[in-house]
Amino acid sequence: MDSIFSARAAADAIPIWFVTGANFPDVMHAIGAQARAFARAAGFEPKAGRYLLLPGNGDAGRALGGVLFGIEGADDTRDGARDGAKNGAKDPFLTGRLPHHLPDGIYRFANEPPDARLAALAFALGAYRFTRYRKAEPRSIKLDLPQSIAREELERIVEGVTLARDLINTPANDMGPAQLEQAARKLAARHAATITAVVGDELLEQNFPLIHAVGRAAAAAPRLIDMAWGEADHPRVTLVGKGVCFDTGGLDIKPETAMLNMKKDMGGAAAALALAHMIMAGGIKIRLRVLIPAVENVIAGSSFRPRDIYTSRKGITVEIGNTDAEGRLILADALALADEEAPELLVDMGTLTGAARVALGPDLPPFYTDDETLAADVARHARAENDPVWRLPLWRPYDQILDSKTADMNNIATGGFAGSIICALFLNRFVAAAKAWLHFDIYAWTPTAKPGRPEGGECQAARALYALLAERYG
Image (cartoon, rainbow, N blue to C red; front, side):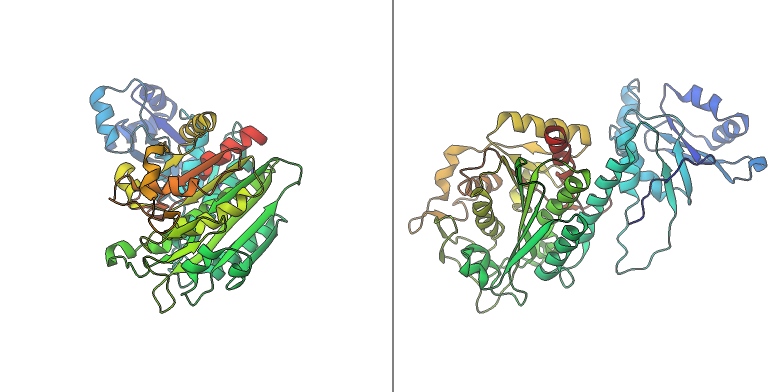
């Protein structure tokens, strides 16, 4: 993909002035008399989200002289802050709105916002468009980065997020298990990683019965994708991403409203691949492993059924209480495999429960861990990267809710309470040797466009995790 960041400093880059109530007089003075008069005539006010394109100086041969863009300042009044909140105030990604309003050209920050790096990242992420199936007018918007910002790091993050969004936005007829494997192989080839896949009935031969059971009814064979990168003596970090390329719910079929966006049910796999790209491109000194169980959960004569019982890779027998709780089943076998290497850090990511969305909404994925230091680090980096997550407890008293009368455990809770916690507790039973474990119950979708986050597929938690890994091992 072409970078949105200008390859070299552009002397004629169009200035973007960030305006608050406090700096408004200084900015108005700096833009010059002609632009100042235009801004006053246009009635521009320094409120969050407001923007104004300033006319250029004819002598300079440039039609656009600059851009005024309102952000919230620390000194804004209570009323102003409330008004700004309606327009996305207190959001360091507010600059993600700009690419949709600006004409083609190369732009620069004339004065720096509170976090110039996040502002630049938001600008890039806000320019994303998914155009595989619908032609769009080509755009040429570039940002001349301030020298204080590491361009290469920002580019690898944008590339990773773009990869995840593209994978999630692609419909299931073009993003089934085989195509997801192809995407992983393409990424592996780019970074000289090794990659293998266990496909179809080989899953039974190599002891991945839960992955096979969930995916066996689909025309596209289920598989376990296994990618490895880095030096063997570096700390082991393993990512496991749920790759359900479409989920009908199986025999416990979803209603049509719940099935509509199920192309995004491989969002955990997409986020894991995005994070893997950031890690490999950044040269982080870890032994990385990425495991993606890729399936379709469909309805056919060979579909797995409610009350079926399967012996998992770990030897735990699982009764199927609901075929629509399939993501945790395929993750269980993959986690068991990952745990056999006793990695220093084991992370799983998946679009798993509606309960998480009821509790926290689509923009704030919950995460789970027993490691207090790790939890604090995740939360700290999530705040710094504007990649929000929220810790929920692995509440052990609920563990008994997974009891089954005919197997070691059920795949769902009885009673319907605490669905996201119950799912985390289910997965936790398949992790024993890893030194630390993190579980993310992501949504992978933005229902309504926000600054820097267009409507559609979204890469959640990966940026925060990349920052954590770069700090620990970079």
